[in-house]
Image (cartoon, rainbow, N blue to C red):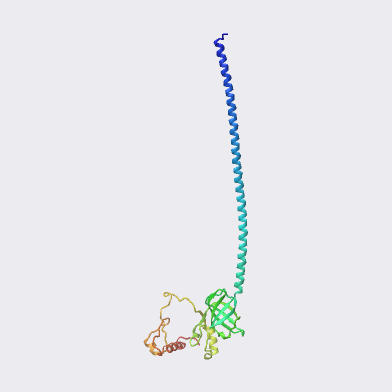
Length: 281
């Protein structure tokens, strides 16, 4: 059977159209399946990312909580330490208040060991009271752990017994100075050793009017601050006053052989100041 060209061409075109439609449908199906796969993969990845983020957030929250707890623990520890330090400070204050007095432990060669005085300083004067209520004075020479070494500067060690109370004075070694000192025999503390040679009226007037207490361990003034030597120092010995000029505040050496009268010259010079430089009654 013979078919015309027109019919064949139309059938071919229809077949091609049908094929195109089927192909487009398959492509769409493939595309849809790919898109769904991609969406699933993306959703899985997003779920993984969200899980990671959640884990990170949880770790951060845990860290924050642990930091807060550590801060609280540190604060508690600091508060405990501060309370302990405050207790220590209070105990130290109480000890410092109670450490104004101590007890005599041992005595040997006028050097005493005293316990219970941990806050005294070197060069401080301490009072020691005997069982017969005699007051002796001591000078702090050394401070060690648990005890203090002092040397007696006033009184005899025969009066002391172990256990005698020792009290602080919070003062350095002082001696007396002034015009009333001239002509007196005194110890380093300033107590007169010849009270029988001086009348009671004069001693009272000297103590009231012309007495001054000077610290023994004092820093000497510098050369620029010192006054110039203007006033002569008269010894009372005519040969010395005529031939050797000596000024007040000047240093002089008495040099000579043994038994030539060095000590006697110094003592006579000191005693003669009572008549030359003394203006008291």
